[in-house]
Length: 117
Length: 118
Image 1 (cartoon, one colour):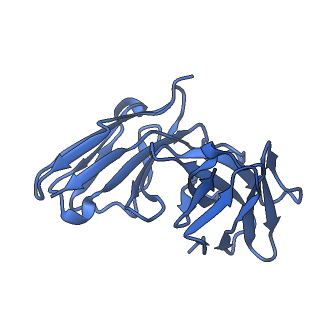
Image 2: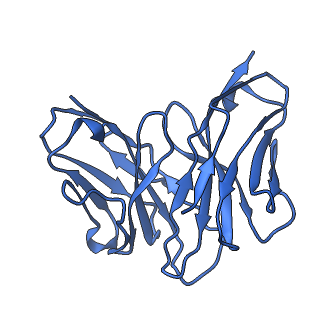
């Protein structure tokens, strides 16, 4: 079974600084996708960034970028120029495409990010 | 484009009572998911529909939970009878992905329903 591990329950960063959130996963699949979702207090899960396993190039979305190390099964999120609005729970998630069309997301336990003004 | 709608946003019930949650996915999205998120944990898939058929319900406690997606659009998730451990946020998500295509399709989430069982 696939598992996703986020070893940092809480992180904090000074506003405008850079922070990296860690994620590791375990899978025997070769085709899969990885995601970072943000969940603010409103509870709505918002997609931050995604990475296809077959792509060597790391995904980037504005201030958000990932460091994807397929051999090490590591998928960290870097947030540059942190802003107060970045404060939230961040979840790493994994998805495989199975033969049966089951695209369920497997989530980690989350990292609570606090931005210090 | 309207997002995934869910209602109610909050629900408080006594144990052994029944409760129902409603989800309206993004228009045109064939696939609908219900997740349970217990406090301090990541969401866990309960059931996945593709159109009005069930793709995966392996983690749905079928003795008390049921879900349906009539006409392949809206969906309801029901708990009967509720237990204390059912207290959680219930998230609905939808995506366009039919199973035949590899793509980077994304699941879009609704705001969730927070259930408290007393």
